[in-house]
Each structure stands twice: as structure tokens, then as C-alpha cells.
Length: 305
Image 1 (cartoon, rainbow, N blue to C red):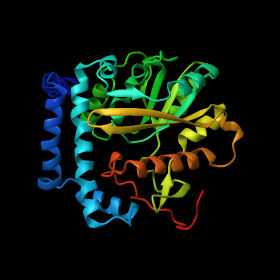
Image 2 (image 1 turned 180 degrees about the vertical axis):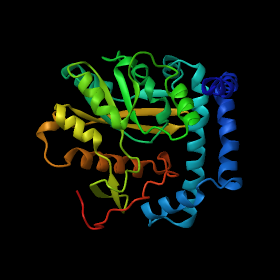
Image 3 (image 1 turned 135 degrees about the vertical axis):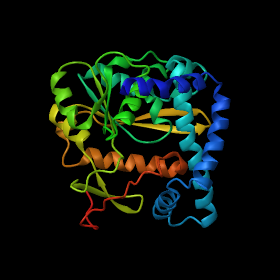
């Protein structure tokens, strides 16, 4: 019954997805206005997050960022629906995605059995499963060699729909794995060529121990990706998706470390935090500001990593 209900919802989405991208962007503009002005979806959260992160900005600058953010957020939704009936190769062909330095990830993948990739909610993160098709340089990996850690949803219908959308271009065993099962997955595939993606900017549980000052605020962090990389001595790469125009994204890589087992303390997550902060400051509306990122605060407000 759940599968039937999912298809009842998905079939109209597939039909809508056949419309041109420019039409989806028009829908996005209308939806952004409704979300911000009519439904007021998390307007208070967005406003609070922006003001706390950038106290130096004026009210006019915050309002401008807020408007830009809602359009960006709705673009992610509408572009993801549009992508249901498009191949990732087509997305690259029309210039939707470009990889600035693909050789970095290719090199690490060729040298090691397993690479941990830290990413964030920037650009259109929902379409990044097609990363192997976005580069003009032939990648060393295939779409079936990438697996994304994720937090399962409590609602069974939402979880089923999420998987159908996320795995629409995916074959094979990988794709998405619950964060709680990622270590088991890595152990099972030890010695095999895999990319392990961790979206590490989500709000952690209040029991999280890693903390840092991030965007002017004491912030807790999940460090499951760091723990796995250290346990298996994997290299760690930071991946950022910049939004350079509407429906135009550039993916960039930074090497955090060659062998996670040889770095001290929480060097990896700390480096990720500084890189992410750098990129958010450079393109302020390009992050997921409606997320309740600071729902849980560190007990020791002055403690850094």
C-alpha cells in the first residue's frame, strides 16, 4: 500500500519534471514568495541564524539575504523534481554543473581503497549523486562507487519518497546508507574502491562532544565521518558546491588530509569547519539557513576544538 501511495505522488512529479528548467525556476520564484510571505516557513529561524552569524550586517542586508535564500532553497526543490527525468550527463552538457579541480578527487581515489568526502548543504546538494558525470575529465569512479550517509526520516511515506528521489539515477548496492549503519557498510567493503560522503553540517544530538565557534556561535558537531576515516586510515576530501548563477553550480575540492589515522585530535572536523565557514562567508545565501543548526548548544560555551 505504501509503494502504491508513493507512486500516486511520484507520477505527477515525473510529468511536471518534463517541463523545461526555466519553467521550474518560475515555479520556484512563486514558491519562494509563498514560503516567505504567506506560509512564513521558518522565517524566524532564517532571520535568527543570519543575524547571529553576521551581526555586522544591516537590516536591509539581512532582508536581501533572506529573499535570496528562499529562492535558492526553492530552486533546490524544483531543480530536484526537474532532474527526475534528466540524466546527470545532460546536466553537465547544459552547463548546470562544472567541476573546477576533478583531478584532486581522482588522484585520491586512484591511490587509496576508500576516500571520505565531507560536504555540506550548499548549492544543490540533492543532485550531487551525479558527481561522476559532472566533470569534463573522465572520473576514476562510477556512480555506483559512491555512498551517502543520511539520517532516516520517522515518517515511512517521507522516507520512501526520499529514497525514490535520491536513488532515481542510482544502481547497485550503494547510494544512501543510514549514518548509524555506515561503519558496518565500510567494514563490509574494506579493501574495495568506494567514496564515502558525509554531509557533516547537520544539527547533531545534544550528546555530541565536538564543539567549535562557527559563524560567531558555539556549535556542536557530528564526527562520524572523521572517526571512520581515522579507523581505516583513509584520505579526507572537502567538497563545496558554489552557486554561480541560477541553475549553475561549480564543485570544488580541498584535500584535508592524506591519511586520517596520522592526524591528531579533531583536526579533520576542525579543518572542515574552517573551510565551510570560508565558503559560506564568500556566498552567504548559498547555505541551508532554514535548518535549526543551533538547536543544541555546547554546555561549555568557551570551549573550542
